[in-house]
Amino acid sequence: TLERGMKVHGHVLVWHGQSPARIFSGSTGGSRELARDNMERYIEAVLTHFRDRIVSWDVVNEAIEPNEGRADGMRADSMWMQALGEHYIDIAFHTAPMSLLAWLRVLAVAAAVFFVVEIETWLVNRYRL
Image (tube, rainbow, N blue to C red; front, side, top):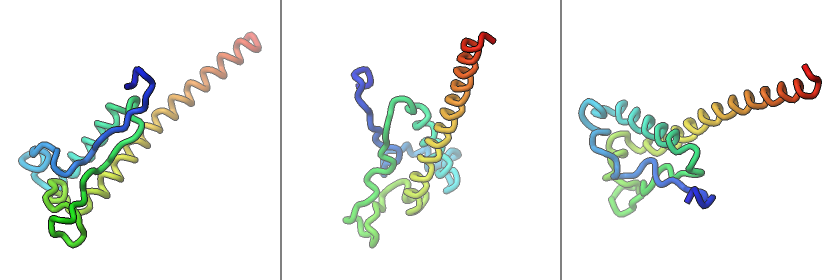
């Protein structure tokens, strides 16, 4: 796909039941804080790994299931819902843009350095400095 110049859409960063159980239990995820840290770390790692290849992402998928009996229609059997409560969606959507913004800052610095080098090269060539 990339070799053909096509854009790739990423699916999905947080899904209701597709995360390994270790994220939510034991020494790596046995508390709400550890589960949140795991989610944030995972989102940052995936976005960083695919930053040059994926142009857009589904951040949360299948969070709604009106037939599970919750008044708000949210999926009750979601491991993320059980670990973090209904705010897991907010956490995911806030983490993804912050990871992307961090990468954009890196790109901005690199672009500024490139620009300075190009201007310096131009001045040296132009004025034989």
